[in-house]
Length: 598
Image (cartoon, rainbow, N blue to C red; front, side, top):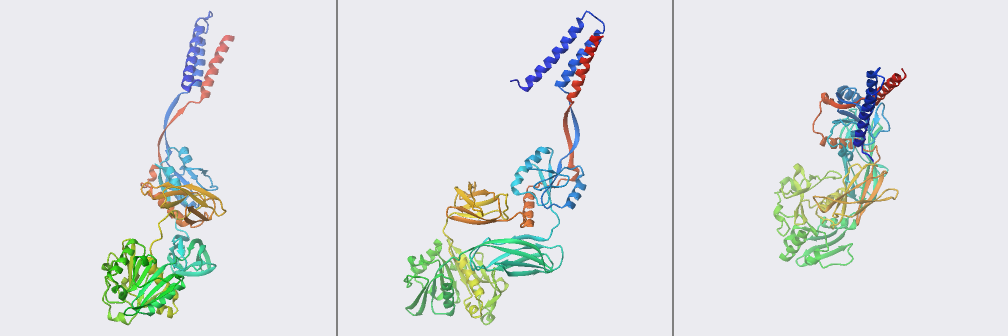
């Protein structure tokens, strides 16, 4: 088979041969009349064939638009009209991901957009914006997102996607309303109103709290009400995990109401509790709750401490520890197998406490001995107060409970792989007598959760995409597993296997991309690790998703292109139409036929 250049060469040779043959025949003709006309007609016919095979080309310089407007879902026609007035009415307009848009062409993918408009340099995006997964297809093109005026709805929200049963849980965010009149933000869980807050200006930040009462997956509801009407609603998925049961060893130098109530409260929550209480010199009393086999609590040994995750002791008990017992406690904390808590009921911190050098008690003011001071900590159910002293704040301490002026009431510090905490609130049992069990439980949960050892190392899954949606990529990260197959089960039971990609910087991490097709709960499994993720429908959390898309596009933005650069010179190559050569050939051939008949 001949290539195209060979064909052109043969066609040119054929035209040249035809012109030569017709000229020679005209010159050798015996009849010399109209010889010049015949030679001219033959050359004209050969020229027509040449123009038909090789139409002449030329270059022209015109101005073509380098900016294009791309419409996405929820775009504002007013914003479009204002932008076209700035760029010019001839600016191309396309729509992407919309069922239809008036007087605009659809774009199936962004690669096709670049092929349709090769001179494209700036892309103005209106509406919801482009998903982050589509941005790599626009490499080298400047993105100019145009965000509409804020509309009514939840602009931002943040909440833990997992919570333990009985632990305080909170959601916070920002709401926007077009009217500057009061708006109520309400949280509904298990079919009932659980918490609410009023935004007097109609817009602002909010924080709602609730303590889950049942295990499993739940979908709460966040609503905004204005003048008795619901103006916005969003779903809030949450997975409530079972309460993590602790093995607690309590050491008290003497009987006290504080230790008694703490022991009973932990046992009522099904925690394992072992208590050793001093009665007199050399005489102690032991109790075991939810522990079927009694243990020898006479002395702290490595074997005994390996059975417990948290050690709670008062100052008198720590002061009486022998060097071997203090060393055993310090080693257990250093290894991270247990945490230690000191009830600071004395004037000084015992040196037997691991990491005691970082803790120092401040002198107690005279008023503090008789006047209760208010306490504060994150997710506290309500304001409460008790008699207390304060710790000196240092860079090594992490606050757990604070008092007036943000003074430290309870703090923790890391010692090796474990945590050590000190609390100066040594009389919290009156809260139970005052019918405040929620405050009492939240206080001790705040402290014990801070010092309990971390769970055993193993594969873990994390969801990196804040607002998963159907037909959009969802990023999952596996920690502790650099390879393997991740299985995701959809709500209908369909299982999809996703291959993990090892992280280039952290070998213990791996990433996976999953494309959900339906909304609802999805379960991701990797060996023993399990992660539930909720896929929202396409209209949920529209404003936060729009903000995230604009931020992704803004990171790729290198500057603002002026409107004068919306059109730029473009050089185009044009060729004569082939029908010109055909007409010239017919004219030459017709003259040859006419001359022959004359």
